[in-house]
Amino acid sequence: MAVVLDRIESASKSETGTTITLPTACPMEWHKLSGDSLLLKAIQETRYQGRATTDGRANMLMLAGHSYLGLNGDPRINGAAKRAIDAFGTGVAGMRLAEETQSLMRELEHSIANLKGAADAVAFSTGYLANITSIGCLLQQKDVIISDESNGTGLEDGCAASKAKHIRFKHNDAASLDRRLQECRTYSRKLVVAEAVFSMDGDILNLPAISRVCRRHGAVLLVDEAHAVGVLGRTGAGIEEHFGMPNDTIDIKTGTLSEVIPSSGGYVAGNNELCAYLRQEARGFKFAESPPPATLAAAIEGIQVLLESSQVVERLRKNSDRFKRLLREAGFELGQTRTPIVPILIGDSERAARLARYCQDRGVFIPVFVPPMIPAGTARLRATIVATHSTEDLEYAAKVLQSGARELGILPQPIRAYEAGEHETLRAGKPTRTGRRFHALCSSGRGERDLQCAG
Image (cartoon, rainbow, N blue to C red; front, side):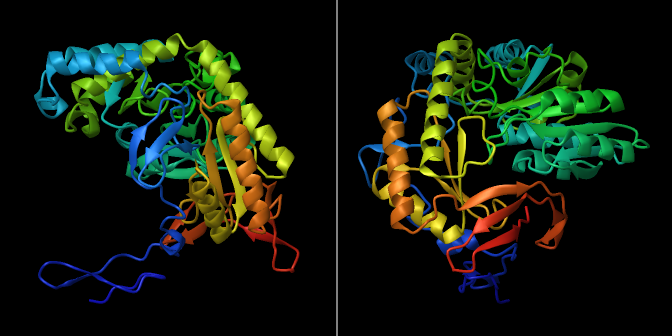
């Protein structure tokens, strides 16, 4: 059978010579633009100060990772991982259901619960697994999930894995959520799902308003804090500390151990009943392998280092504010970001890719995001700032971006947020969420035009 992929001509063949038909999901902008313009060459060494050695360059300035406090490579965390290998070896006995839970695993779960101000926590092999497993097993057909239309893939896939009905509310809009919950008042149980920090735009969930609406309607609130822990709040404890709200404002807290905490894995934190249920019913817990001992020890020590890093959290905040100020002064549109996630909105995918390559050629790596990963017409470079970036690093990166935008003919304000919208569109034959509507300033001479963005 022949394979048809938009902008891809050749088919894949198995060892027997049979042609393998691959699904056509959506316009393949990523494949059209892929190559050196989008991908970083293999990293040979990661530096402690936000730099890396790659195949193509000895000293690449990285504005790409999520080690926001610069803890990856911290000697205390490295030492804990090495000691765990000496004590427990490098591997695990197998899936959690069939093995005795390692003492390190329970210590890690206690550390997570303490960090999040929760009664208990359950650790998973990945943050993605924590989301899809917990959401997938908590609800039944008579229940409903109402999620923010700008949630990331992990939460979206978790909602899709559930038997419950799934609908969306306008991005970060408490009034829209209120209407949705009113429409769903006949459902048995209602789960509201959102990110604390939205990973593509860097804006923060309006937790005070969203939580009030949930309480009024008796809905359970699940918030993914993957990009909030270590970033929000005076000590980096997360979104509840950021808003000065009680630790039980959020009913179910999920997160990752591979962002600020330089390890691997994910977690769900909440009350004792929730965690006991997940240990019994969550397949992603029972049948997945435990993280290896070095990973567990690194996460435990990473949480302890985080709890002692309030000054580093403040340094991160100052660095991200400085970088955003430099870019805005240069004319770039950054959307509504209030965090170290800095979306540099370009609009056109090819222009975004060329600017990413321009930066990489000058020693600055900033990843580019194009459809279908994001809504059409909202291509961007997404910089992430860390506490260990120096003032000179940030000033150099801003100058490279500005000179590249000028040299490549990118307008200083290529795209700006226009109005929020909630619409349904079709992508790969399935209804999916949409993003926002934008005004794009086109260089084609046609002037300003509206772009309806499908998410």
